[in-house]
Image (cartoon, rainbow, N blue to C red; front, side):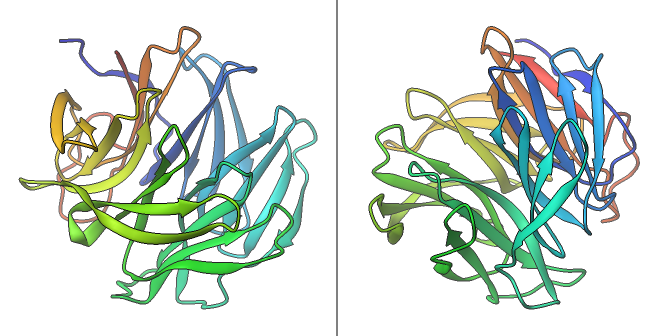
Length: 276
């Protein structure tokens, strides 16, 4: 089995939200509590850093020149070359909450999850949807606690969504025309000490779920609920993952060095990679 390799480390307490750009051959991820966005090449030799407006839940490539990110103060558009950003909209108006993970839907809408800001917000959070400019804003999943991993099936019929404390991955029937969704069923339940955090999906529809507290990422078939493979990570708190690399054969994994009683671990809070 290929071992996890530390690619990048910058002292982050909570590194999250990795995204791969095939055109630029770079990875984007966020350091939530340090209020930073990083652009990193496959080998960790090139790094570019941007400051955000408060704790940043996620960032997405709009195109090769532009990043959309959601921070405590709102959703912003960032010019990669100038480093300048501009406010677009605010979906979350509750100052006791912050953004936590997000993605585009198949029609280019932005999906934005929320979680408690410096507190546990039991049942108070949710998943929002908005057009790129912030119009048609609505909450499509309600009463969550820690809105986390989001992925779409290759045929766009289903939205997979994680509310971390449930220890499950939910499947929602998704209407790409109006952006609404309806709960269908749970497809994965995490056993052991870990809880599901971020996730990604491959071209065959398998989902890769990062386990916070579980020191691993596991690959699942969401149709059968079967665990197909396990990717150990030498850090307890594994936060998210994405498939990328020039040959699209690498699993990039973000981790945390969080103040939750976990002993300090070498590389915790860093970015790891495993060859698939």
